Length: 162
Image (cartoon, rainbow, N blue to C red):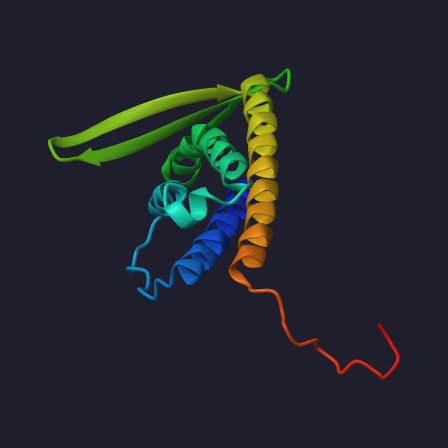
């Protein structure tokens, strides 16, 4: 869950900055879900003033890689988990979830053993680290692009100094 929290914060920071850079002042709707944030950020990379930023391509690629891992967030947060343990110390986790759709509901069951959980965690950590880093670099570049070079120095220049 910690990985997903880091990713969501980086995504939210980036959306806020893109909105400021685009002059968009509209607020967020109540119940603005993580999936909505991911979709908004992905769509933002198609905006002309954002697309032209050098780091936008890498940030979008990192977002796409992360989205492959993001589906597990829903299962971990909203699924009922039962852990089965053996006397030998092995475990198996079962995640049950009810998914509501227009035509009714579906119950899903997913099983994850320790080896698969470790593999998933390694992929998740890698994709989150890449996402957070690429979004951080993108935001830094966006801030630089958004600011005009200062014509007046921050402090007066002393006579005889360069």
